[in-house]
Length: 445
Image 1 (cartoon, rainbow, N blue to C red):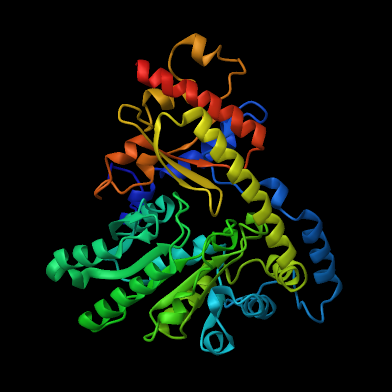
Image 2 (image 1 turned 45 degrees about the vertical axis):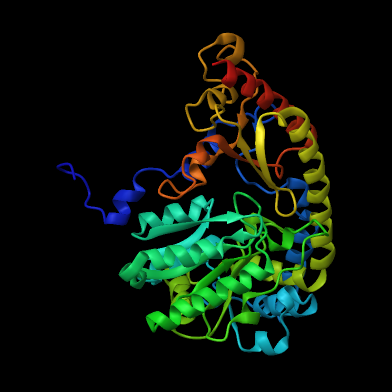
Protein backbone atom coordinates (compact mmCIF):
# COMPACT_ATOMS: atom_id res chain seq x y z
CA UNK A 1 0.00 0.00 0.00
CA UNK A 2 1.34 3.44 -0.92
CA UNK A 3 1.60 6.05 1.85
CA UNK A 4 -1.66 7.90 2.32
CA UNK A 5 -3.83 5.33 0.52
CA UNK A 6 -6.95 3.78 2.01
CA UNK A 7 -6.33 0.32 3.48
CA UNK A 8 -8.39 -2.18 1.52
CA UNK A 9 -9.11 -5.83 2.16
CA UNK A 10 -7.45 -8.44 -0.05
CA UNK A 11 -10.67 -8.56 -2.03
CA UNK A 12 -10.65 -4.78 -2.21
CA UNK A 13 -7.13 -4.64 -3.61
CA UNK A 14 -8.00 -7.35 -6.16
CA UNK A 15 -11.12 -5.42 -7.14
CA UNK A 16 -9.19 -2.18 -7.72
CA UNK A 17 -8.11 -3.62 -11.08
CA UNK A 18 -11.15 -3.75 -13.40
CA UNK A 19 -12.16 -7.24 -14.51
CA UNK A 20 -12.52 -8.06 -18.23
CA UNK A 21 -16.32 -7.81 -18.08
CA UNK A 22 -16.09 -4.53 -16.16
CA UNK A 23 -13.84 -3.07 -18.84
CA UNK A 24 -15.96 -4.43 -21.66
CA UNK A 25 -19.26 -3.17 -20.26
CA UNK A 26 -17.75 0.24 -19.51
CA UNK A 27 -16.34 0.53 -23.02
CA UNK A 28 -19.69 -0.51 -24.50
CA UNK A 29 -21.58 2.04 -22.40
CA UNK A 30 -19.23 4.95 -23.02
CA UNK A 31 -17.73 4.35 -26.46
CA UNK A 32 -20.17 2.23 -28.47
CA UNK A 33 -21.52 4.20 -31.44
CA UNK A 34 -25.09 3.18 -32.16
CA UNK A 35 -25.67 2.56 -35.84
CA UNK A 36 -21.93 2.35 -36.56
CA UNK A 37 -20.25 -0.21 -34.29
CA UNK A 38 -21.52 -3.79 -34.09
CA UNK A 39 -21.86 -5.62 -30.77
CA UNK A 40 -21.19 -9.35 -30.94
CA UNK A 41 -19.41 -9.26 -27.59
CA UNK A 42 -21.50 -7.85 -24.76
CA UNK A 43 -24.16 -10.48 -24.02
CA UNK A 44 -27.25 -8.30 -24.03
CA UNK A 45 -30.56 -9.98 -24.82
CA UNK A 46 -32.31 -8.97 -28.01
CA UNK A 47 -34.40 -5.86 -27.46
CA UNK A 48 -37.28 -7.31 -29.50
CA UNK A 49 -37.67 -10.17 -26.99
CA UNK A 50 -38.34 -7.81 -24.06
CA UNK A 51 -42.13 -7.74 -23.52
CA UNK A 52 -42.64 -4.03 -22.92
CA UNK A 53 -46.41 -4.20 -23.33
CA UNK A 54 -46.68 -7.09 -20.87
CA UNK A 55 -44.48 -5.27 -18.37
CA UNK A 56 -46.68 -2.16 -18.65
CA UNK A 57 -49.80 -4.30 -18.18
CA UNK A 58 -48.25 -6.08 -15.21
CA UNK A 59 -47.26 -2.83 -13.52
CA UNK A 60 -50.79 -1.44 -13.89
CA UNK A 61 -52.33 -4.62 -12.47
CA UNK A 62 -49.90 -4.77 -9.56
CA UNK A 63 -50.54 -1.17 -8.56
CA UNK A 64 -54.30 -1.55 -9.06
CA UNK A 65 -54.58 -4.56 -6.72
CA UNK A 66 -52.84 -3.80 -3.42
CA UNK A 67 -54.91 -6.50 -1.73
CA UNK A 68 -52.84 -9.11 -3.61
CA UNK A 69 -49.62 -7.21 -4.28
CA UNK A 70 -49.10 -5.64 -0.86
CA UNK A 71 -46.96 -2.48 -0.46
CA UNK A 72 -45.45 -3.08 -3.91
CA UNK A 73 -43.53 0.21 -3.85
CA UNK A 74 -42.11 -0.35 -0.37
CA UNK A 75 -39.47 -2.64 1.10
CA UNK A 76 -39.95 -6.38 0.76
CA UNK A 77 -39.04 -9.41 2.82
CA UNK A 78 -35.52 -10.80 2.42
CA UNK A 79 -36.67 -14.23 1.28
CA UNK A 80 -38.60 -12.66 -1.58
CA UNK A 81 -42.17 -11.87 -2.55
CA UNK A 82 -44.51 -14.73 -1.55
CA UNK A 83 -46.39 -14.09 -4.79
CA UNK A 84 -43.25 -14.49 -6.91
CA UNK A 85 -42.07 -17.56 -5.02
CA UNK A 86 -45.44 -19.23 -5.58
CA UNK A 87 -45.43 -18.17 -9.26
CA UNK A 88 -41.98 -19.73 -9.77
CA UNK A 89 -43.12 -22.90 -8.05
CA UNK A 90 -46.25 -23.10 -10.21
CA UNK A 91 -44.28 -22.37 -13.41
CA UNK A 92 -41.98 -25.31 -12.66
CA UNK A 93 -44.83 -27.67 -11.84
CA UNK A 94 -47.13 -26.69 -14.72
CA UNK A 95 -44.32 -27.16 -17.23
CA UNK A 96 -42.59 -30.05 -15.46
CA UNK A 97 -39.35 -28.08 -15.54
CA UNK A 98 -36.51 -30.52 -15.00
CA UNK A 99 -39.03 -33.35 -14.56
CA UNK A 100 -39.81 -32.14 -11.05
CA UNK A 101 -43.13 -32.93 -9.39
CA UNK A 102 -45.00 -31.59 -6.38
CA UNK A 103 -43.25 -33.96 -3.97
CA UNK A 104 -39.76 -32.85 -4.99
CA UNK A 105 -40.54 -29.13 -4.97
CA UNK A 106 -42.44 -29.35 -1.66
CA UNK A 107 -39.21 -30.44 -0.01
CA UNK A 108 -37.26 -27.49 -1.44
CA UNK A 109 -37.07 -23.82 -0.54
CA UNK A 110 -37.18 -20.99 -3.10
CA UNK A 111 -35.52 -17.66 -2.37
CA UNK A 112 -35.19 -14.50 -4.47
CA UNK A 113 -31.82 -12.79 -4.88
CA UNK A 114 -31.31 -9.10 -4.10
CA UNK A 115 -30.19 -8.18 -7.62
CA UNK A 116 -30.60 -10.97 -10.15
CA UNK A 117 -28.94 -14.37 -10.34
CA UNK A 118 -25.46 -12.86 -10.15
CA UNK A 119 -26.21 -11.55 -6.66
CA UNK A 120 -27.03 -15.09 -5.51
CA UNK A 121 -23.75 -16.37 -6.91
CA UNK A 122 -21.98 -13.51 -5.17
CA UNK A 123 -23.74 -14.53 -1.96
CA UNK A 124 -22.38 -18.07 -2.26
CA UNK A 125 -18.87 -16.66 -2.72
CA UNK A 126 -19.26 -14.63 0.48
CA UNK A 127 -20.80 -17.37 2.60
CA UNK A 128 -18.78 -20.46 1.67
CA UNK A 129 -15.28 -20.91 3.04
CA UNK A 130 -12.59 -20.12 0.44
CA UNK A 131 -10.93 -23.10 -1.16
CA UNK A 132 -11.20 -24.96 -4.46
CA UNK A 133 -14.19 -24.52 -6.76
CA UNK A 134 -14.74 -27.09 -9.51
CA UNK A 135 -16.18 -25.77 -12.76
CA UNK A 136 -16.19 -26.30 -16.52
CA UNK A 137 -13.49 -25.12 -18.94
CA UNK A 138 -14.21 -22.86 -20.86
CA UNK A 139 -15.28 -21.06 -17.70
CA UNK A 140 -18.03 -18.58 -16.98
CA UNK A 141 -15.46 -15.84 -16.82
CA UNK A 142 -17.56 -13.29 -14.89
CA UNK A 143 -18.18 -15.49 -11.86
CA UNK A 144 -14.82 -17.23 -11.90
CA UNK A 145 -13.07 -13.87 -11.89
CA UNK A 146 -15.15 -12.88 -8.85
CA UNK A 147 -14.34 -16.17 -7.10
CA UNK A 148 -10.61 -15.66 -7.54
CA UNK A 149 -10.82 -12.10 -6.22
CA UNK A 150 -12.68 -13.53 -3.21
CA UNK A 151 -9.82 -15.95 -2.49
CA UNK A 152 -11.02 -19.16 -4.19
CA UNK A 153 -8.96 -21.36 -6.49
CA UNK A 154 -10.53 -22.54 -9.73
CA UNK A 155 -10.19 -26.16 -10.84
CA UNK A 156 -11.37 -25.98 -14.45
CA UNK A 157 -12.35 -29.30 -16.04
CA UNK A 158 -12.54 -29.38 -19.86
CA UNK A 159 -15.91 -30.03 -21.51
CA UNK A 160 -16.92 -31.95 -24.60
CA UNK A 161 -20.15 -31.84 -26.59
CA UNK A 162 -22.05 -33.21 -23.54
CA UNK A 163 -20.66 -30.81 -20.96
CA UNK A 164 -18.09 -31.20 -18.20
CA UNK A 165 -15.89 -34.29 -18.65
CA UNK A 166 -16.71 -36.32 -15.54
CA UNK A 167 -13.98 -38.83 -16.41
CA UNK A 168 -11.41 -36.02 -16.23
CA UNK A 169 -13.11 -34.71 -13.10
CA UNK A 170 -12.56 -38.03 -11.32
CA UNK A 171 -8.90 -38.07 -12.40
CA UNK A 172 -8.30 -34.47 -11.35
CA UNK A 173 -9.89 -35.02 -7.93
CA UNK A 174 -7.68 -38.07 -7.46
CA UNK A 175 -4.58 -36.10 -8.43
CA UNK A 176 -5.35 -33.50 -5.78
CA UNK A 177 -4.48 -36.02 -3.08
CA UNK A 178 -4.84 -34.49 0.37
CA UNK A 179 -5.76 -31.16 -1.24
CA UNK A 180 -9.17 -32.68 -1.98
CA UNK A 181 -10.06 -31.46 1.49
CA UNK A 182 -9.93 -27.91 0.12
CA UNK A 183 -12.81 -28.47 -2.34
CA UNK A 184 -15.67 -26.21 -1.31
CA UNK A 185 -18.30 -26.42 -4.04
CA UNK A 186 -18.99 -27.25 -7.67
CA UNK A 187 -20.35 -24.62 -10.05
CA UNK A 188 -21.83 -25.65 -13.41
CA UNK A 189 -23.59 -23.49 -16.00
CA UNK A 190 -25.97 -26.02 -17.54
CA UNK A 191 -26.00 -24.24 -20.92
CA UNK A 192 -22.42 -23.14 -20.72
CA UNK A 193 -21.45 -19.54 -21.10
CA UNK A 194 -19.40 -19.00 -23.30
CA UNK A 195 -19.83 -22.13 -25.44
CA UNK A 196 -23.61 -22.72 -25.17
CA UNK A 197 -22.86 -26.44 -24.73
CA UNK A 198 -25.91 -28.10 -23.15
CA UNK A 199 -25.09 -30.34 -20.19
CA UNK A 200 -26.52 -33.76 -21.03
CA UNK A 201 -28.74 -35.58 -18.57
CA UNK A 202 -26.33 -38.50 -18.38
CA UNK A 203 -23.46 -36.15 -17.55
CA UNK A 204 -25.62 -34.34 -14.97
CA UNK A 205 -26.46 -37.62 -13.24
CA UNK A 206 -22.81 -38.68 -13.23
CA UNK A 207 -21.73 -35.32 -11.83
CA UNK A 208 -24.16 -35.62 -8.92
CA UNK A 209 -22.87 -39.16 -8.33
CA UNK A 210 -19.21 -38.05 -8.32
CA UNK A 211 -19.84 -35.19 -5.89
CA UNK A 212 -22.02 -37.37 -3.65
CA UNK A 213 -19.15 -39.85 -3.41
CA UNK A 214 -16.70 -37.03 -2.74
CA UNK A 215 -18.96 -35.64 0.00
CA UNK A 216 -19.06 -39.07 1.61
CA UNK A 217 -15.28 -39.46 1.54
CA UNK A 218 -14.75 -35.99 3.03
CA UNK A 219 -17.55 -36.49 5.57
CA UNK A 220 -19.16 -33.14 4.69
CA UNK A 221 -21.50 -31.93 1.98
CA UNK A 222 -19.99 -30.43 -1.15
CA UNK A 223 -22.71 -28.27 -2.76
CA UNK A 224 -23.31 -28.38 -6.51
CA UNK A 225 -24.69 -25.10 -7.82
CA UNK A 226 -26.35 -25.58 -11.21
CA UNK A 227 -26.66 -22.20 -12.92
CA UNK A 228 -29.67 -22.56 -15.24
CA UNK A 229 -29.53 -19.05 -16.72
CA UNK A 230 -30.01 -20.25 -20.31
CA UNK A 231 -32.07 -23.43 -19.87
CA UNK A 232 -35.30 -21.63 -20.77
CA UNK A 233 -33.57 -20.72 -24.06
CA UNK A 234 -32.97 -24.25 -25.36
CA UNK A 235 -34.48 -23.65 -28.78
CA UNK A 236 -33.30 -26.65 -30.81
CA UNK A 237 -36.10 -29.25 -30.63
CA UNK A 238 -33.53 -32.03 -31.09
CA UNK A 239 -31.99 -31.34 -27.66
CA UNK A 240 -33.18 -33.65 -24.88
CA UNK A 241 -35.27 -31.99 -22.21
CA UNK A 242 -33.03 -31.26 -19.22
CA UNK A 243 -33.51 -33.16 -15.99
CA UNK A 244 -33.16 -31.38 -12.68
CA UNK A 245 -30.22 -32.40 -10.54
CA UNK A 246 -32.75 -32.80 -7.71
CA UNK A 247 -33.98 -36.02 -9.32
CA UNK A 248 -30.66 -37.69 -8.46
CA UNK A 249 -29.79 -35.94 -5.20
CA UNK A 250 -30.31 -38.12 -2.12
CA UNK A 251 -28.15 -36.08 0.25
CA UNK A 252 -29.27 -32.46 -0.29
CA UNK A 253 -26.18 -31.16 -2.11
CA UNK A 254 -27.89 -29.77 -5.24
CA UNK A 255 -28.87 -26.10 -5.59
CA UNK A 256 -30.31 -24.53 -8.73
CA UNK A 257 -30.04 -20.87 -9.66
CA UNK A 258 -32.48 -19.51 -12.22
CA UNK A 259 -33.22 -16.13 -13.74
CA UNK A 260 -35.94 -14.34 -15.65
CA UNK A 261 -33.44 -12.01 -17.34
CA UNK A 262 -33.14 -14.04 -20.54
CA UNK A 263 -36.86 -14.55 -21.19
CA UNK A 264 -38.33 -11.35 -19.73
CA UNK A 265 -35.92 -8.45 -19.11
CA UNK A 266 -32.52 -8.14 -17.42
CA UNK A 267 -33.58 -4.82 -15.85
CA UNK A 268 -36.18 -6.59 -13.69
CA UNK A 269 -33.19 -8.16 -11.85
CA UNK A 270 -35.02 -11.34 -10.90
CA UNK A 271 -32.88 -14.30 -9.91
CA UNK A 272 -33.87 -17.18 -7.67
CA UNK A 273 -32.33 -20.17 -5.93
CA UNK A 274 -34.00 -23.50 -5.20
CA UNK A 275 -32.43 -25.77 -2.64
CA UNK A 276 -32.66 -27.92 0.45
CA UNK A 277 -33.73 -25.92 3.53
CA UNK A 278 -30.91 -25.48 6.00
CA UNK A 279 -28.15 -23.21 7.23
CA UNK A 280 -26.87 -22.34 3.77
CA UNK A 281 -30.26 -21.14 2.53
CA UNK A 282 -30.86 -19.23 5.78
CA UNK A 283 -27.48 -17.54 5.35
CA UNK A 284 -28.34 -16.65 1.75
CA UNK A 285 -31.53 -14.94 2.92
CA UNK A 286 -29.58 -13.03 5.55
CA UNK A 287 -27.10 -11.97 2.87
CA UNK A 288 -30.00 -10.52 0.87
CA UNK A 289 -31.10 -8.62 3.96
CA UNK A 290 -27.59 -7.29 4.50
CA UNK A 291 -27.17 -5.90 0.99
CA UNK A 292 -30.57 -4.27 0.51
CA UNK A 293 -33.46 -6.01 2.36
CA UNK A 294 -34.79 -7.53 -0.87
CA UNK A 295 -34.94 -7.21 -4.62
CA UNK A 296 -37.17 -4.26 -5.62
CA UNK A 297 -40.63 -5.45 -4.66
CA UNK A 298 -42.34 -3.81 -7.65
CA UNK A 299 -40.25 -5.78 -10.13
CA UNK A 300 -40.82 -8.99 -8.17
CA UNK A 301 -44.57 -8.49 -8.38
CA UNK A 302 -44.40 -7.56 -12.07
CA UNK A 303 -42.52 -10.79 -12.70
CA UNK A 304 -45.06 -12.75 -10.65
CA UNK A 305 -47.95 -11.36 -12.70
CA UNK A 306 -46.28 -12.23 -16.02
CA UNK A 307 -45.41 -15.74 -14.80
CA UNK A 308 -49.05 -16.26 -13.81
CA UNK A 309 -50.60 -14.93 -17.01
CA UNK A 310 -48.21 -14.81 -19.97
CA UNK A 311 -45.00 -16.77 -19.43
CA UNK A 312 -45.57 -19.72 -21.75
CA UNK A 313 -46.36 -17.66 -24.83
CA UNK A 314 -43.48 -15.32 -23.98
CA UNK A 315 -41.01 -18.21 -23.74
CA UNK A 316 -42.25 -19.68 -27.03
CA UNK A 317 -41.82 -16.29 -28.72
CA UNK A 318 -38.29 -15.81 -27.40
CA UNK A 319 -37.18 -19.34 -28.29
CA UNK A 320 -38.54 -19.04 -31.82
CA UNK A 321 -36.71 -15.76 -32.36
CA UNK A 322 -33.36 -17.08 -31.22
CA UNK A 323 -33.81 -20.31 -33.18
CA UNK A 324 -34.23 -18.36 -36.42
CA UNK A 325 -31.18 -16.27 -35.62
CA UNK A 326 -29.04 -19.28 -34.70
CA UNK A 327 -29.70 -20.97 -38.03
CA UNK A 328 -28.94 -17.83 -40.05
CA UNK A 329 -25.79 -16.95 -38.14
CA UNK A 330 -24.39 -20.48 -38.46
CA UNK A 331 -24.86 -20.26 -42.21
CA UNK A 332 -23.00 -16.94 -42.34
CA UNK A 333 -20.19 -18.32 -40.15
CA UNK A 334 -19.78 -21.23 -42.56
CA UNK A 335 -19.90 -18.97 -45.62
CA UNK A 336 -17.57 -16.23 -44.40
CA UNK A 337 -15.27 -17.95 -41.89
CA UNK A 338 -15.62 -21.64 -42.70
CA UNK A 339 -12.08 -22.15 -43.95
CA UNK A 340 -10.48 -20.57 -40.89
CA UNK A 341 -12.72 -22.00 -38.14
CA UNK A 342 -11.71 -25.48 -36.94
CA UNK A 343 -14.43 -25.81 -34.29
CA UNK A 344 -17.79 -24.12 -33.77
CA UNK A 345 -19.92 -24.81 -30.70
CA UNK A 346 -23.34 -23.49 -29.78
CA UNK A 347 -26.46 -22.71 -31.74
CA UNK A 348 -28.85 -25.03 -29.88
CA UNK A 349 -29.51 -22.85 -26.83
CA UNK A 350 -28.90 -19.34 -25.61
CA UNK A 351 -27.49 -16.85 -28.09
CA UNK A 352 -23.77 -17.58 -28.43
CA UNK A 353 -21.45 -19.32 -30.83
CA UNK A 354 -17.95 -20.20 -29.66
CA UNK A 355 -15.34 -20.35 -32.41
CA UNK A 356 -11.86 -21.86 -32.49
CA UNK A 357 -9.67 -20.58 -35.33
CA UNK A 358 -6.88 -22.36 -37.13
CA UNK A 359 -3.27 -22.09 -36.00
CA UNK A 360 -1.89 -18.65 -36.71
CA UNK A 361 -5.15 -16.73 -36.22
CA UNK A 362 -5.13 -15.30 -32.72
CA UNK A 363 -8.05 -13.49 -31.11
CA UNK A 364 -6.60 -12.13 -27.87
CA UNK A 365 -6.39 -8.43 -27.08
CA UNK A 366 -3.58 -6.90 -29.11
CA UNK A 367 -3.67 -9.63 -31.76
CA UNK A 368 -3.83 -8.62 -35.41
CA UNK A 369 -7.45 -9.75 -35.68
CA UNK A 370 -8.45 -7.84 -32.56
CA UNK A 371 -6.67 -4.71 -33.73
CA UNK A 372 -8.33 -4.96 -37.15
CA UNK A 373 -11.83 -5.27 -35.70
CA UNK A 374 -11.26 -2.58 -33.04
CA UNK A 375 -9.78 -0.26 -35.74
CA UNK A 376 -6.49 0.17 -33.83
CA UNK A 377 -3.99 -1.13 -36.43
CA UNK A 378 -2.44 2.27 -37.07
CA UNK A 379 -3.23 1.88 -40.79
CA UNK A 380 -5.60 4.67 -41.85
CA UNK A 381 -6.97 2.57 -44.71
CA UNK A 382 -8.20 0.01 -42.16
CA UNK A 383 -8.94 2.21 -39.16
CA UNK A 384 -10.36 5.17 -41.03
CA UNK A 385 -9.96 8.78 -39.85
CA UNK A 386 -10.37 9.51 -36.12
CA UNK A 387 -13.84 10.95 -36.70
CA UNK A 388 -14.77 8.43 -39.41
CA UNK A 389 -17.54 5.86 -39.52
CA UNK A 390 -15.58 2.62 -39.95
CA UNK A 391 -17.45 0.10 -37.81
CA UNK A 392 -15.77 -1.57 -34.87
CA UNK A 393 -16.82 -5.17 -34.22
CA UNK A 394 -16.95 -6.20 -30.56
CA UNK A 395 -16.44 -9.84 -29.58
CA UNK A 396 -15.38 -11.65 -26.42
CA UNK A 397 -11.80 -12.97 -26.74
CA UNK A 398 -11.35 -16.59 -25.75
CA UNK A 399 -8.43 -15.64 -23.50
CA UNK A 400 -11.06 -14.44 -20.98
CA UNK A 401 -13.12 -17.64 -21.34
CA UNK A 402 -10.53 -20.31 -20.51
CA UNK A 403 -8.73 -20.68 -17.24
CA UNK A 404 -5.06 -19.70 -17.67
CA UNK A 405 -3.99 -22.56 -15.42
CA UNK A 406 -6.19 -25.13 -17.15
CA UNK A 407 -5.44 -27.64 -19.86
CA UNK A 408 -6.80 -25.49 -22.72
CA UNK A 409 -5.34 -22.12 -21.77
CA UNK A 410 -3.25 -21.76 -24.92
CA UNK A 411 -6.11 -22.72 -27.25
CA UNK A 412 -8.13 -19.84 -25.81
CA UNK A 413 -5.88 -17.41 -27.66
CA UNK A 414 -7.47 -18.67 -30.89
CA UNK A 415 -11.06 -18.60 -29.65
CA UNK A 416 -13.89 -16.11 -29.37
CA UNK A 417 -17.48 -15.94 -28.22
CA UNK A 418 -19.93 -14.32 -30.63
CA UNK A 419 -23.35 -13.17 -29.44
CA UNK A 420 -26.24 -13.24 -31.90
CA UNK A 421 -28.59 -11.85 -29.26
CA UNK A 422 -28.32 -8.09 -29.43
CA UNK A 423 -27.80 -6.97 -33.03
CA UNK A 424 -30.27 -7.37 -35.87
CA UNK A 425 -29.45 -10.18 -38.35
CA UNK A 426 -28.28 -7.90 -41.15
CA UNK A 427 -25.76 -6.25 -38.87
CA UNK A 428 -24.48 -9.65 -37.70
CA UNK A 429 -23.94 -10.74 -41.31
CA UNK A 430 -22.11 -7.47 -41.95
CA UNK A 431 -19.89 -8.01 -38.90
CA UNK A 432 -18.94 -11.50 -40.01
CA UNK A 433 -17.87 -10.01 -43.32
CA UNK A 434 -15.52 -7.63 -41.47
CA UNK A 435 -14.32 -10.58 -39.42
CA UNK A 436 -13.46 -12.46 -42.60
CA UNK A 437 -11.39 -9.47 -43.75
CA UNK A 438 -9.74 -9.39 -40.33
CA UNK A 439 -8.78 -13.05 -40.57
CA UNK A 440 -7.06 -12.40 -43.90
CA UNK A 441 -5.28 -9.42 -42.38
CA UNK A 442 -4.11 -11.62 -39.47
CA UNK A 443 -2.88 -14.32 -41.85
CA UNK A 444 -0.96 -11.81 -43.96
CA UNK A 445 0.58 -10.29 -40.85
